[in-house]
Length: 88
Image 1 (cartoon, rainbow, N blue to C red):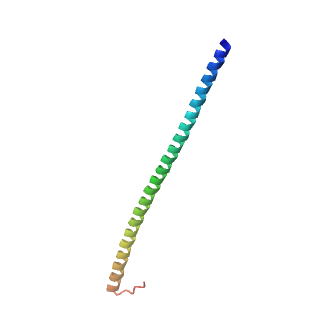
Image 2: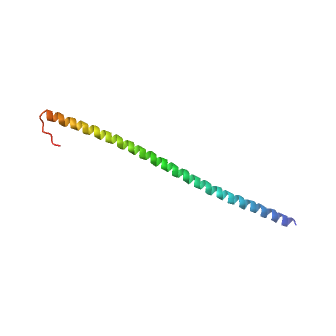
Image 3: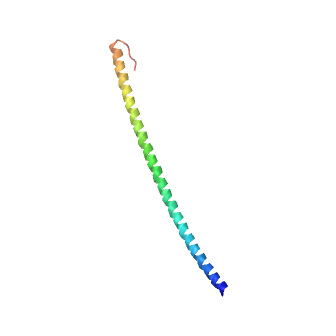
């Protein structure tokens, strides 16, 4: 009789452990999914930041180009005023 009770207890314990294992596997799956979502959001934020930085850099470069173009036009005008032939 004691062996049957031990066996019964072990089966019950095994069933509890199986249920706990199933629960933990579900939790692992859920957390893995959450982690992937967080990584995707982080990558998206990084990409957005990089895009904004590139846009700002491009605007700065365009501004510098406009300044250089303005200076070039002024120099051409000064050279013409001094009687120099300016080829475009």
